[in-house]
Image (cartoon, rainbow, N blue to C red; front, side, top):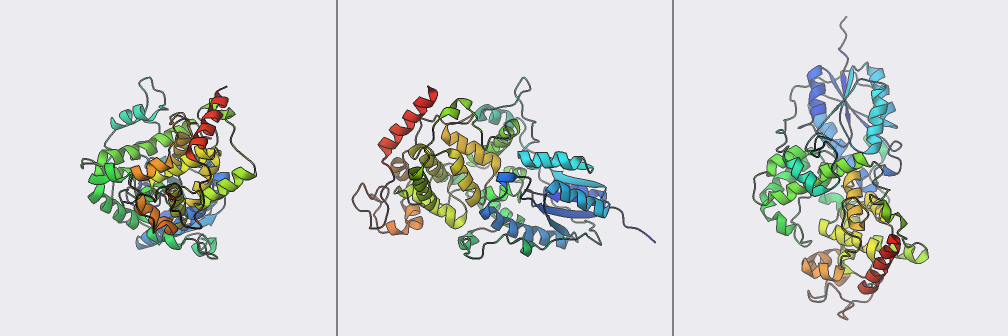
Amino acid sequence: MTHSPPPSIVWFRQDLRLSDQVAFAAAAAEGPVLAVYVLDDETPGEWRIGGAQRWWLHHALAALAASLADLGVPLVLRRGRAAEEVARIAKETGAKRVHCLAHQEPWWRAAEDALAQAVDLVCHPGRLLVEEGAVRTGTGGRFRIFTPFWRALQLHMPPPAPEPAPTAVQGVAHPPRSERLEDWRLLPTAPNWAEGFAHWTPGEAGAQARLEAFADAVGDYDHARNLPSTDGTSSLSPHLHFGEVSPAAVWHALDGQSGAESYLREIGWRDFAANLIVQQPDYGSAHGRTKMDSLRWRTGPDAEAEFRAWTQGRTGYPIVDAGMRQLWHIGWMHNRVRMIAASFVVKHLLIDWRRGQHWFWDCLVDADYGNNAVNWQWIAGTGVDSSPFGRIMAPLVQSPKFDAAGYIRKWVPELAGVDDAAIHDPHGAGVAPAGYPEPLIAHRPARERALAAAAAARG
């Protein structure tokens, strides 16, 4: 009687692809492969994935399971603490090794440490352009400012060419128990608030199609990325977050093309954000600049009502409202508008940036701990590398400057009949239709209040 050799486990997390997936390739080279995904709402604590990402995850896992099935590899789904569940599966199957891509989020690093106590765990690079920690200062330290980090990162470029998915893979004949994806109820039903999410195609094939389309348009990116009314961004951010395409694959698809440098710099920003959260794991909740700890944010009923109006896209500032409604409808917001909307809640309303960050965390399909924390702290002026708190975006200036009229008409339909000259500030022009809310606060008094709060914090 012959016995099948023990399998190697691939532990999938935010790396849901088979191409350029070093952990999957390493497991395939050892013998039988068992793929595992654990829905872990316990280890991340407050950072468990939000509602919008649960929708994406459902479809991404369905796509990954189909791709694995074509290779004869089962995808085992479990729910619970990831380190415990993966160790349990290894014991059930007699697996000799667990392979994964190294993650930088503090809860995943803790899970890796815990799992390594129970199994032979091999963490591979692959979620960043370079292996985390490889980019160092001349004295061997860590960078905390992006510009010198970016210069140093480019010395490591290009990254290794992406490897295709293995074609000859041996699966496990008798896989262990797996839960059903449908039983996780990741999709909203009553009500189905994700109808607009049909805008997206989660999965590796969707990511590749999006990358190929963007590669044809990247020449216009440097200019078009700032125009909300134009489809000038890559829309790759959720695919990158879920690891449906590797940053190396993106780099090689775009490098050398006219106009690509601005976008590749943003891919470098992902590496920088990961570098920061490794240095300061609590960056999503603790100021990078501790001198900002004494800044007094507004609280109380008025602040609560205004925060709620912001989440609903009813601030009376059309560009802000358009962004917040786009966020709700498709789980994503144009990057220029993200900055305007974030600046508004922090500076105009003087509401703690962490509240805005958590709202984005629940609503964004591309919510990423490193990127979200670094970007919100940049806007709030609280980060180690950030815009000064006194730099306050003026929505009524930003909106016409970046030609947002068409964007506003799409997402704030009650303003569809207002002409281009007035749509950015319909109340100021005296043409606001009945039912469109008055501005929560005028720009000048909001700016003065924010600057006074910052001055008081400085003491």
